[in-house]
Image (cartoon, rainbow, N blue to C red):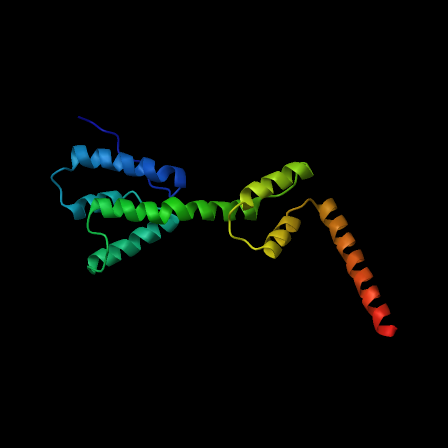
Amino acid sequence: MKIAKSLLFSRKIEEVNIFINMACLYLSIKMTEELELTKMAWMLSYMQEGVVEAWKNNLLDELSKRKSEVETVEELFSKMRNKFGETVEEERKVEQLRTIEQEGKTYDKYVQEFKKITRGNGYEEQPLIEEFKRKLSGGIRRKLAETELSLYDRGIAKKSSKVSV
């Protein structure tokens, strides 16, 4: 019986369970007699790029030194879900926040998109405000800067008039 091998593991949150399910299927059909370490090595061989590869190399290093918490395929699956299933979503939101721009969108659409990305991401108010302003289109950003400067100047003028009284 032939079975499709799994695709390379990319760490995308939506692909974590797909990858694990494909691996389970392959392991249960083709590798039932293999040792756990062999099965884990086969799984890890599909982790070949970027952060995933670095994570794999660290795990292999731990395994070779017998300092790993992972001893079974099930523990490897669990560790993968913990590492790439939840934190990837947070990283994705941060990346979206870094790349969102108003260019080509109405102000209202940009605001709604920004709110959606930042919902529940843990950023504090001031960094979010600065990030929001940084990604506005040039004209709106200039107008906002002029308005803020005007408000700042008025605040300085009020303070200085109070001091001279």
